Length: 179
Length: 164
Image (cartoon, rainbow over all chains, first blue to last red; front, side, top):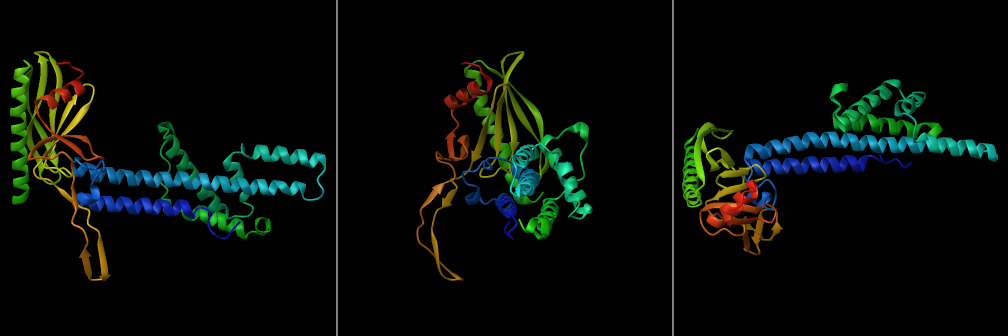
């Protein structure tokens, strides 16, 4: 894995969206019609447009957590699949080959909580606990199931920091770094 | 509320009344009924104020649409009324003047000095002729049409599914 954080493109894109929303809000507050020309803000009450921008910012915060989590899941699945290939490291027997095929296929269906628990061996369990809270929040954003109640809010910045910390630890760990 | 805001709100309320008077005449010609009902609006700039909404009936008991004032502080316009029927709604805005968008390109020779290269401009809304109420056909294309009797009944049909 390269030393660049693979989640940086998602994070940068989110920051651009936040900046664009900030500019839109300024355009509305300053009644800058040149900026707002040919947008759906035209002919809307100013208060309503400001609220729309604010709501969009809240949505952007939720969506970036969804994206960061999806990216994170994909990366750790890849880690596990790479680890699974160790079964084939000495000249692989037909039996080892079969085990490997089965593991590689099944990994996609493992529960993310179980996967995160495996990583407790190499990453501080507290950080893994925080990652599970991000997952809980991500699930709530994706499904909005009122019967499950609202989990503690996670800020995008916090989610990005926790997930990045896990990926960095994995990259530095000898088991993973040598792959 | 300061003086400038008072002026904006007064103008809007007068323009709403003029719009209703014009539409009531048109409705009479088609033997449609109408009724004005007090309506409260709260805008951040002005606080709460009272105006009227115009209910349109095809006969005594059957409402087909209403004209609902939305506010005086509208982006790129000087007030808005919505025409709302059971099937859809349309936006009417008051345009006082043509808002010209500068499309000039500027070049800088140093940080403090800017030179305007072109002064070509285009209107915020294509279709603006003079101060009055306009229907916004498409915000993104900036298409506005001056409200007249034919257009009003087309819009009324569209929002209410009532044929004239």
